Image (spheres, rainbow over the protein chains, first blue to last red):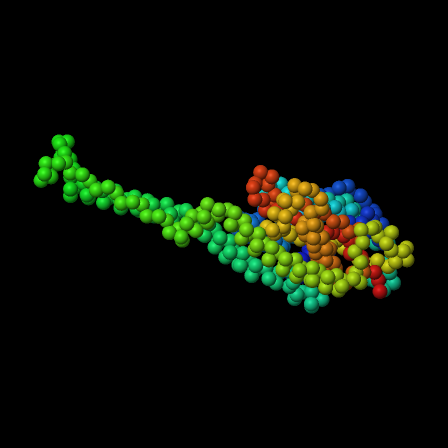
Length: 127
Length: 257
């Protein structure tokens, strides 16, 4: 919906992503187990240098925030690719796990349950 | 919607200026503290070279010994004495001061960095809190709750859900140099490290706000999880780039109107 330059969110037309256990008004047809995507990314040395300077004055490290956004999007994308391959159209119970391996590099892991769902209750004005 | 698309985050407003100012101050402090040593050594080397050349020229023009080792005699029959070197001049005041800078360069640098960190960090924190409060007021109609959907909505409302969407917000913030020193001092005596408390508070609230900004038209964000990790910290490094990364995620729920 919102396409702010800072908080860009990828949208998937054929995939429902949620961190709830169930999707409201949908029935589960098939259950494909756990799908996951993982990314390890690092920024180039210029960003690290700028972050080092920014560390003196404090505040937000924009380069690293961007790095996190990119790696999160990529991890979700990998997970969606995997569940598409299985024939799922929804991923529920999504969880993110982050850890820092070395200085300046970040490891992001996202996992969820791939499901095939079908809409059951259609509200009257919703087509 | 238009306002969301065009608006820059207020946090980024003074980002460039702070980086430029800190870079300049950093380079200035660096030059003052460490360049003097190199300059001085070059001067010493130059002086030594000139002295040795003068000595050589002196020896060639007024030789005290002949090539066969016999010392040269003057008119009175005494061996020629070379003139004693002049007494060393005492260091002037400016030189003394610079020597002090040279010796205590690291200490002065820490003080300069702490001052810069204190001033810039305090201003940035104040601005950040102002913007956080303003945006929290703006989004007060959109609740973000850490509980599940069926606890938050009634059965009737659950039937009216038309869209569920994963929304995330993430932010990486770092502490300033002054706060780092304060926290290190506080580490000795223990107790609550209040300088980091405000940092974590700011980071979490900012992450939640960014998550809300992704779904401004939703009715609620349920099942919100917060995750934080310390990023880019080396245990063995003396001056680690310590930054805290917070990721907030949840499910935006839109009801049928």
